[in-house]
Length: 228
Length: 249
Ligand SMILES: Nc1ncnc2c1ncn2[C@@H]1O[C@H](COP(=O)(O)OP(=O)(O)OP(=O)(O)O)[C@@H](O)[C@H]1O
Ligand SMILES: [Mg+2]
Image 1 (cartoon, rainbow over the protein chains, first blue to last red):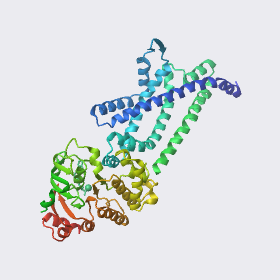
Image 2 (cartoon, chains in turn red, brown):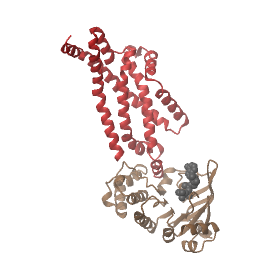
Image 3 (spheres, chains in turn cyan, red):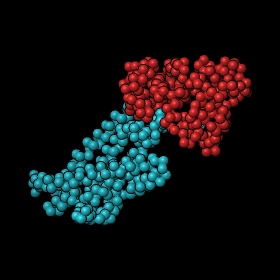
Image 4 (cartoon, helix red, strand yellow):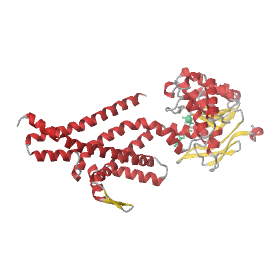
């Protein structure tokens, strides 16, 4: 077996794996959107002065933040219905979609902590100044506190996304045909040992090329915001 | 001592008590300030000066006692907070400007957003106030680009833009470098000379003597002594006042 033919084999399988990687990207994008949305509510809930809201938000946050991602994934895969009925029509819920929901739980919990941390990092004087000017608590939060939080939340949010995309291959364990599952399939069908390492290396490079720029931008933003 | 004008006091505190946990910060504060008066509150650290100010605009709720501001009863649990904050401005030691808003926005935003006044009028007023603080060119700058003294003058303009009847100043020069203290004190003085009722907590004894009509001395949560600044500083009556003035003068 020559090296060129291995290279050719990898190239031949590349579109197949790339399509799988597309699913990783899709799951990560959906999960970050859902998780961020839910995380905003949980995070604001954590800072609420209403006892019940604060308590429930803190509990949910800690629960989902301290559970292994894989366990949450299993929960969503096996506990969610396989099909849902909307106005008479039955829709199957594909496993990748159920996995996506599984990923959005830890994302929501981690983002909840990012929101809480950012709100907490704003000096108390900002709240007091706003209160002394007649602003209510909620208006202060939305007009004065949160706008200052956005720049502080952006870098950790991007880091969270990088963490999320690198976690998506976990979905292969529950049968989602994403990049790792497809790489495994390719390796098995070629049935030659020399093919294994280049194929997995290709997968690594794929994730690296996607994730590294995100981490770099996140770090750059963090440095920028720290100096102002 | 000055019971004859007590009925005309714009701000009055009667028997005000406040405890944080088991720690009694205010133990029966009696204080009256007439319209147009400048009252200085002095006293040792931890004696409750900031807490007194914060009870006047309702930032700190009291346990007992009555606080009256004109026809508003501040200590009424159903008090209209917006009306109260409209009539009492506050300037803090740490300026507390909003860093993501320009100087002009900082000054104009509350009257527009809270009091729902027309933007055009408020911005014109804000620009005039900034001009009065000699900050015309800084209107579009962000607070982070200003010196401490400039920031504090913006904070004073912000309080004035609400068109309050009383402004509370809490050690507004304490966080400043010495060379900026003067510019801020003269800004405060200008506000006072324009007829604004001012209640100021200060460590600047000279300023209290020159700018105030009345000095209140607090110790351990009560007002121990009060009087005209000249008499107060020249001839303090209470031993605690004497001891404090000996230390700081
Ligand atoms: N929110 C709070 N919770 C608990 N204790 C408080 C609170 N605010 C103030 N205190 C305490 O009340 C006491 C009086 O505080 P206050 O800030 O009114 O004093 P002060 O006279 O302004 O002192 P300083 O000159 O140091 O500013 C202090 O011992 C302070 O620790
Ligand atoms: Mg104080």
